Image (cartoon, rainbow, N blue to C red; front, side):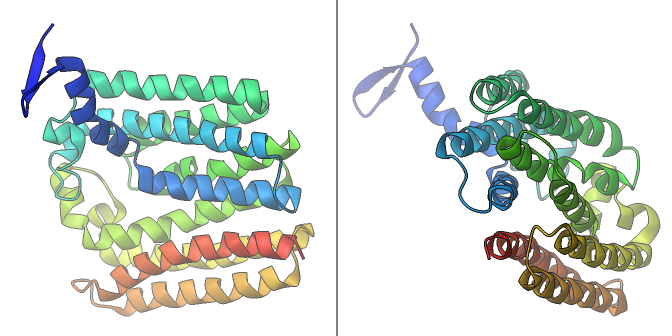
Length: 305
C-alpha cells in the first residue's frame, strides 16, 4: 500500500488523501450559500408551527436539505469547472485549482443527494423528500445546465432553485404546501434578481470573459438597473402578501414595508449612479444580504405574537 512520510511517520496514502481533500470537498458544497438556504427553511418551519417544531423532524429536515443542496452545489461546480477557471471570482475553487478531480466531485454530488433522499423519506415525509429533490434538479439541470449559459434571464428563472427551502420547511412540519410557504417562495424569487444583478454589475467583465450572458453583459448596465428597480418594487408587494394570510401580525407588515422601501431606494440610487461607477451597486448587494434574513426573522417573531 502506498504510504506518505511526514515528520517521521508513515501514513497510508488514502488517509493522507482524505485529510488533504476534506477542505476541498467542503468547499464544493458552497457552505455560505447553504447557510441562507437552511435559515429560510428553518424560518418556514417555525412560522408553520408558530414556534419550535419537533426536534427530530427539524434536525432531519435541516440535514436532508444540507445534503441535497451540498450535492447540487458540487454538481454545479463539476459542470461549471471550465468557466470557473476563467473567472477571477471562482478560479481558486477546488476543481480549477486541481485539489480534487471532476470524477470525485461528480460522485460526491450524487452521493450527497442520494443520502438526502434516504434521510427525508425515513425521518420526515415523502413530500419533503420530493420537493428537496426537485430543488436540486432545478438548480443543477434547469439553471446550471440549461439557463446559465444561454439566456440573460438565467438568474430570473433560475432564482426558483434558491426559493425551494420555505416549501421544504413548511411541508416538513405540516405535510403539505401552504399558501404562506408559496408566498415565501415568491419573496426569494423576487429578491434574487436585484440581489444578484447588483453583484453582476461590478463583476460584468468576469462574466463576459467566461461567456456567460448575464444581464449587464447582454443588455448593459442601464437596462439591468431599471429591471432591478422593478423587481425591488415587486418584492415589496410580494412580501406584504404574507400579512393577508393571517400567519403573521401587523409588526411583520411594518417591517416588510420599511425594509422593502429601503431596498427600492438602494436600487434607485444605483440607477442614478454612472454606469462606470459601482459604489451603490456594491451597497445594494450588501443591503440585499441584510434584507432577507431580517425579513424572515420578523416572520418568526410576528407569527409567535
